[in-house]
Image (spheres, rainbow, N blue to C red):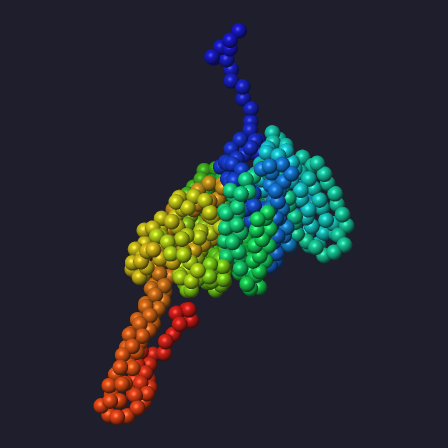
Length: 516
Ligand code: ADP
Ligand code: MG
């Protein structure tokens, strides 16, 4: 009997793991090329977070090996980071939306998703588990696991577990995965990703070995930007649910005013009092007595109050003009670099900092529009450039104002860091055009542009002088001979004098490569 079209539908829930199993392309795992790139990314980014967020100078090793079957690729990343407590390892690698970065401070990871996507992809395509070895600095043991994910329950499956006594001081994490990947086609992007990671983390040692290449990036400096600090939420960024959560975890005997002065970023006694006067809610009402209506009103007033302080940037960790310049000079081999770290700004209660560098000349090949190197919270972004706010700002800039005529040997580096980056997708490849961010990028570009223009002008002058010197010196011999004939004095004498005059007038020849 055929089923009636009006038969009852069958209903069930979908676990987070199953959702991403079905929709893996939205996290960057769409095909064997992209998935290999994304796997390297997730592993490297976790390793960098595990080191520099904790003040450890990163030592990273990345290995890509071809597997025993065609299209199988093994990715292994080793770090010297803080490691993971052994009892957290199964969840950290086997439960979608589980992690340590759900706090307000800048980090590469945000969703608690990335590594699980790689684990899912490995298990779907090659049926193999992730191998993890990790130790925290103070733990007496080293833990080893082999894990998979129970997709329908969103829970880790422990296939192997071993704790060993630690007999050396090692701390860090080693992760290994075998996925279906296309190394020959992913190679260029993966290597470029590693190179750009080295540019933005010049204080890291990065060793990369693949079937066709070995890249070694030695740290250029031991100076690391201070690690970001955890911030409180900013009042502009709250909503009803967030307020409910904050109230739930607060001491219920607090008054509304004390709650506000102790919970939010940049709010002390004075500002809390002023706000309470302005919004006309009862400042002495106890949290336990607040109604839903009070909370809805409070959320609205907090968003509207015009006198909150800007969020402070302590939760951010830009790399700074000096490190930016060093990384670029060394790795791009530019003749000249102008770098600018803008003052902190904010959008919707989230602090952010924009850093921009213009790299000019040297080993940079001329191109019809500026090469763009995008970074978000120190993550190199290689895909979806056309959708990114930086591309838009760069394309809208009138480069002729800065004496740049295309084709030109120009590369632009844009780094945006924030406690909440407006990514266009969970694959984290493009930043949305938030007006405040757009403006900061534009201002930073213009500031660098003015410096580049001064540099180009200076180089032009030097070239012009050199050209005139060459031009005039062609005639020196002839003039000196003529003078010698008229006066009967030796022509060398005239030639020497004339050269001296020319040098005084046009200056000594300066090599362009010496000018910075
Ligand atoms: P996210 O990086 O967004 O938090 P992931 O799924 O990539 O999400 O990682 C989950 C958690 O696993 C991280 O928050 C971190 O606590 C931990 N983790 C992953 N890799 C490492 C590593 N190499 N060293 C230390 N901790 C790690
Ligand atoms: Mg991550």
